[in-house]
Length: 270
Image 1 (cartoon, rainbow, N blue to C red):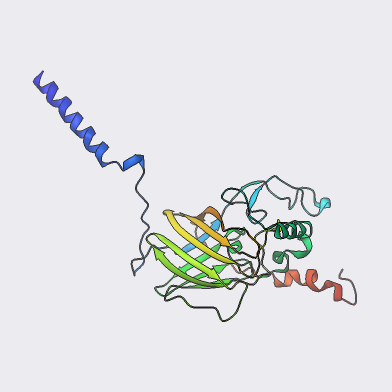
Image 2 (image 1 turned 135 degrees about the vertical axis):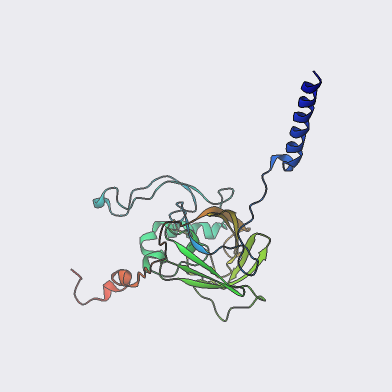
């Protein structure tokens, strides 16, 4: 009997030890990413979003493609959306402009013209992008249109002029890379559904590793000329782990020449 009681007491003590070792409220310990040589979370790699946000940031059903003669080819896949709260808070005038954009997508979307996509759209287009870290700067290269941007990790600097990919100043908050993006041209869109911004766009991105091959991406978007308040999108990003993964050049300028300049031909293209 004494041995049995001793065994029960030992088991109870062991249970108490494991219960006390668990994080409060049943939470799992926060993931800590591998480190670079300077001790920062290592985000190096080739990443890609796996969602339908480039078609429409908000939840949407499947829609037929732009060329009925091609059947199901190029149809819009359904998606749950990435906008927190589902609402994009347009002003009334901006909401009318967004509706006009959507009705004329095949003429107006900058993607069709092979223009660089801007931030945050470059992150969730259906193409990979690569992050290359150093102590003072982080280089991000995107497959679509050969877009590139450099995130300054030193003292914040100001852009000399507006550009398609804007001006990026970064900092670390624990495990999270925070990037402040300003000075983007007003001509980029957020998606093919006509969601857009004005010339006062300000984006704050957050990249937070959550496992060896995934990280969470958030972007807070504000532009008082178009939106009534800031709003946020969020999604996971996935690291490419296949053998010989790489971002292969995919410059699309030559594919857009007919679209942009075909009307100026003396003779129609065959």
